[in-house]
Image 1 (spheres, rainbow, N blue to C red):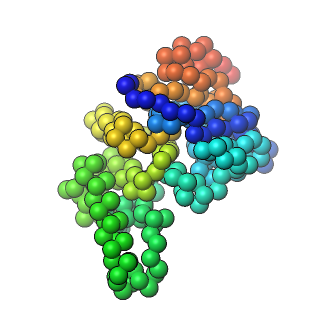
Image 2 (image 1 turned 90 degrees about the vertical axis):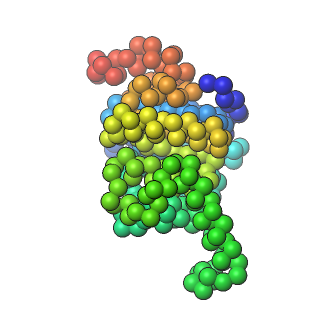
Length: 260
């Protein structure tokens, strides 16, 4: 890839997460650089989604430290993460099924709305100008994702692949600096995966958005990632460039089921 990768903007140091007596993550450290596509892979139950939940503050680790843009944190708060420019999609689609595509994307602008409730209700003055600007931004995302033809369609009527694209659009509507994607291509056919890969690469290239993604399709991971971290049973067993990770004996053993 001809993209220029920047300095470290997120540094996860010795993260451990437990639920009662169950260890979800054990002493995991890795970093994410500005403008890179950083993949997290591993077998089912490896702790991948738990790690994303630590990054955006859904889970608070018992041990470790998070450094984001030079600010040291014991853990990340969900509101603080969103305010700092971290957005995410989910493994299970979390959209408002009865609302249109346009209205779903507008919910991604919530943190950027400054006018009060009464002003919005009256659609007056600053609130009117603000909403028009939000709609302009959302229309840009709709054009970018090539979903103009479904902009007024209720999301619940859309096929699965398009719903995943709409969820990506809602995250993009927040204009994130860092985008967390939890299995963005799960359940998709080959053509839908190709489209999603193209959009992810374009988001990274055109918007300069740093991307951290969980993905099970190894072909996708090896094609679009700059670096890959591998988890297994809540521990880190590999970290590096795609080719380096692909040839790591411990990683091969974990995927072939011969490690345990």
